[in-house]
Image (cartoon, rainbow, N blue to C red):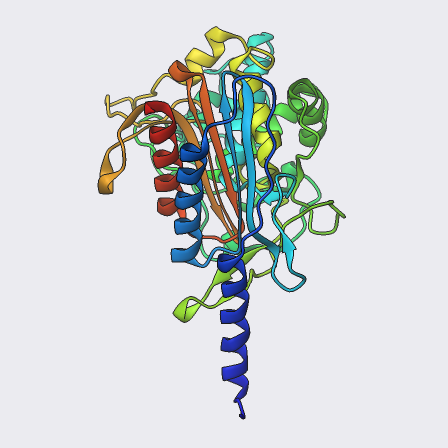
Length: 379
């Protein structure tokens, strides 16, 4: 039987997807007490993840669940690399996308705890190279997306230029007018987190990544979290995928995230991100007072709720049939070849991490992490 070139491509895509979903690979680890969730609970997680993958043709997913500051489950599903049939394991390294932001926020608040950074001082105190604007901008406003510094425009989301430093990356947006008076509105800005990275460097005297290694990764026991450097050899790094018309899976376009490392340029595993969440809950990274400040909702100067704290989204409303999780402290991320989410229920001493290697699935991964959380904390 003869096939056209297009037929062959469709056949290959279909065959790969069938292989993934018909016989997905998973690994499982347990760690001490409390005991691993039972068969009913693990089957529920499997069903949620399999549905997320099948409906969206996601090549690979990794999931971890934390209870009482113990990682009780780590599982990998599907493929980290389709072309070489490399399965996802709990050690697979994914792009974090905007899940990088809570890590940066914690780093900033460490400096606040030490008295080296004032949340409400103008940022020029720490970054003199950032031009003065019509109104002063503060670190608190950067953390909560109230600064008025813009987000991406044009094709900036797909930049593949290598920036030598975060200070150099400020040139992309630092001359632009603020979108609004700081504090008046909430406008999401990854570039605001690039400024936070420069603030960390200015105060600490270290590069942003060196600061994280010494003050976040080492204390938390995180050994597989990296800068998303496309030239670096990183063991276990997942390939990145996106879909085009008719849901055909393809390799993601090449990007270089050196201009936004603090807000969307880190890589990690579900195990490392679980350790990050555990370290937050047991006080290894910041104290309880600081954590409470970070997880208190910030309002605009007009009193409008933002559902955001300092680096964290607060609560998941019952939209589109999702379970209502008003006490959830979480963040999601969407990037080329990556959709991610982390979530903590502080009152339940519970956390979940989901990392995947297909982009543009923010609503779907929010649904998945909310359903897993609701089920495991109500049974």
